[in-house]
Amino acid sequence: MIVIPAIDLHDGRVVRLKQGAFDAVTYYSTNPDEVARAFEEAGATRIHVVDLDGSLKGAGVNLQAIEAICKAVQCEVELGGGIRSAEDARRAYSLGVNYIILGTIVAKDPQAAKEILSEFPGKAGLGIDALNGRVAIGGWKEVTDRSAFDLAQEYVPFAPAFVVYTDISRDGMLSGPNIETTAAMVAAVDIPVIASGGVSSLGDLKALAEIPGLFGAITGKAVYEGRFTVQEAIDLLGGSE
Image 1: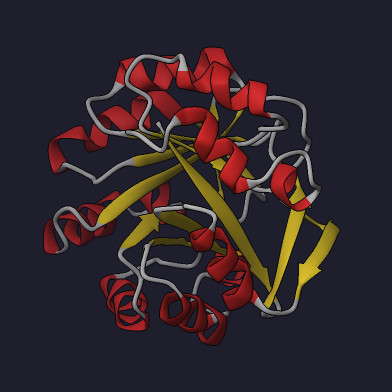
Image 2: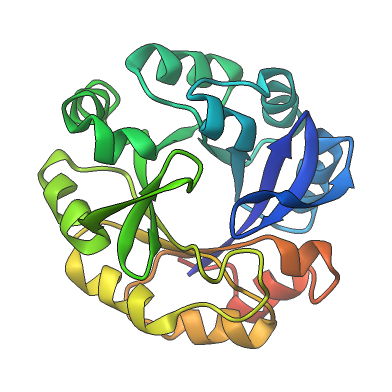
């Protein structure tokens, strides 16, 4: 399992939210590129970037910051937030990202999502965010009746590069990841799964690493709050897949 540090962008700055709420924002840095460079120097082989403003507005917003991150590092960069069309995907790739993450579009416009997956094979993943097992979209402002597992299974034939599975109830809360639902997602789909939400300690990462077949785990607030460093996390897990 690989460790993937996260950079969430709001107004060009590095922030963390609690359960996606913009009225519960903590600012950490005005230099996202420097944060990304530090993560790479600590041993990260992939960085998870989210355009939070883009997720709300349905289009890329923090493009300058995203491009600066990509130019600052040699490791892989995956980007989510506001990618709702093939044109959005092309713009993201032009900034230098390696992978895009399709979120809201996966639930609201599956035909468009499947066309993007077909146009960019191996370079697009799914972002499935769930609250009590139900898919949330539009910057987590709308919770649908759709099962997260059923939605992921629908896309298996289209060979997404991975699925980032986020338990919203745990995100930004430092309350520990939902091991049970994460393991269930891994078992439900033949797609590499990346866990997101709730990691608060090295022990949490170790527990996630014990899930058979889990590809990776995203860590955000715990690193920014000094619970552990990216290097400590990678050293613990050996940096392996």
